Image (tube, rainbow, N blue to C red):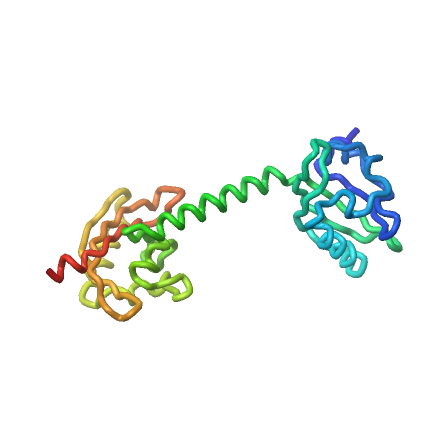
Length: 236
């Protein structure tokens, strides 16, 4: 009874005989009676695109004693392939144990989050506004919107985060850091300023920015700075 309701199902595998044992939890995890899997080879219950990886993991386990975990798709009793976290242990001779746990919902949540993040990055990339989050100590940037690359030319690979003071015009840096320190001291405080910022091509852009203390916000945890390029208006 305990094994039948376990979140982990287990099978004993043999290279030529296939599945020689399936635990009672197979019905709970895979939606199929354990006996359904007896004698099956990997290609008969694992998704075709994942069979090669599964066989390779079993071979690794036979030589090293253990392999995984990886995620692969396997047959489920509802007629579809579910995603399972799989891990292999070599036990004796040519026999290997595989443990399986259904991670279909976890993977769907992860993929939905990744799609949301990708959509947000795409939207911000084309934004006319640069958004950065400065650490509470004011020493580094913990977040920079993807629009910074289009508007300022800087990318994450350029190490913009820890070097941000180098991007501020020397005549404006003291004024900016003083304002950031003042805002940091009071939750919800904000300030506005016009600051010259270095473009990656070496030119200076005039940015109109507004900084707000959101250190207490669990999702932000820093000073949010929103900036617009107003260089053109200053050249008129």
